[in-house]
Length: 278
Image 1: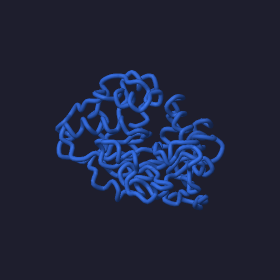
Image 2: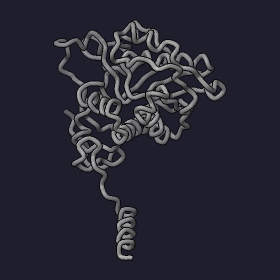
Image 3: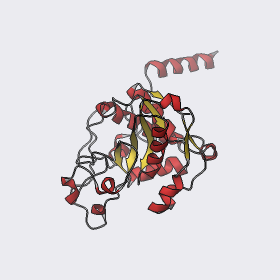
Image 4: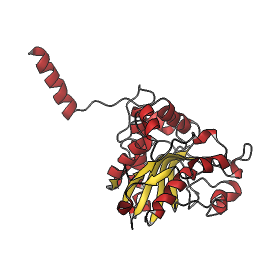
């Protein structure tokens, strides 16, 4: 009876006075509200700051900063209409996502999903026209090995933030592709060609779809997903990812400008003091 009463008191205390959750990265400091990372681990992320490419959301720097569209979008024909991301795929962002993908950290996947959801909520005007949300699917064998699809975890959080339905089963990966990061650009495009199929075309017909994934580098995976959904009758495909990779020649080593990706998170509507902008 004493043990029962103690457990009951603990449960009621957690209900009315919830204890701070530990950071999903360092496990030491308390996580910030709405995001499962502490202030220090969150501030390490290289947040994307304007100017950005109006099409793909990549950073525009040096001579490219005076353009509206980046060199990649001028050269490549991709099937999604517009893409946006929270941070640049380098440094801590790369490390965090590698932990999710290669060390199966569902806890960290949920924390990063929370960050993406806060971004979607704060920038909701960018996404208001999209009626449904679709995650980029994993092959069933790879999802079974990992235990979850990080894109689906992120899509669920974004769906709650934007109050949109998440259609997790409408897009299917029909074959297990090679890991894109191991391939060159030409091989990446061929790797995903014909790798996706829409299972329920009627659900997408006449609707604008927001595709959600963890990373965009070349954009070929998202473009192939967009292509098959457009063929199934979707009106437009947008893309939202946690991170994107900068591929423009302006970012070759030694040619970077002094204006780097920022660590300013004031666009994140979090409780407590804002983080410094470096």
